[in-house]
Length: 307
Image (cartoon, rainbow, N blue to C red; front, side):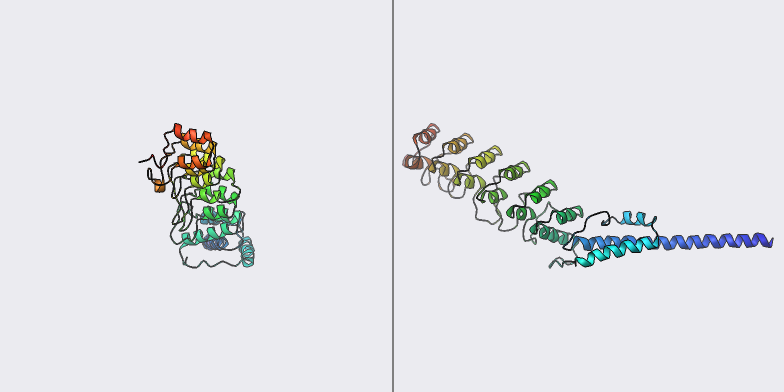
């Protein structure tokens, strides 16, 4: 009888010890998971942006993984990550406060400004919102990438939801931005159009004309032809029309393409009919006979005839 009681007490003690051990392990795993997520958050907002399986914001993943680890392994992993983080102090983003999404957006813009595809990828994976351009964000990440000619970043941002019509104050249409380069990157230009860039939008508080007008002013037939194929309106302009600019350069292929896509030869200042000098007047002064004939065949009028 005494032996049975002793065995029972021993079994109860073992069960209690296992329960206490299990509770301790569960608490340790929760602490490990919380610390791992916190370390990854710091990793997102530093200058290094470490990659790999040791960096994740997935709390459940860390908690599950912990169950198969010894206490020594947990301490080693945490210390290892802490050592990496100590090499790259966290960057403070002024104005972000505790707003996590705002910090992500500011960190993303900084990563793009520095041309870091790796950090950009990390921040997008962490949830940085590419489909919005809040007023407090000083520049569009996509616009910034185009301006700095970081075309690998442009492709990544567009493929992950960035929108070319989302602009900060003072930014022009992104197509116009590309056209302002001395040598237009036609592959990137078409890639923007394929991904929804609108050729009929102006910039945001930027005094820059429509992309088609800029292309015509450069005599850039290839860009103009692409824009027309993507439904650019040849009758939208701020100063002088694309047709007037093409005629003035005696650019017959461009003039013909514009006429074929609906350019009105009798529009003048501000898009008003018969207001100011007409395309035909410019043709008489600057162009050869075939441009004059093209305009007259399409009912173009000179200023003195137009009313």
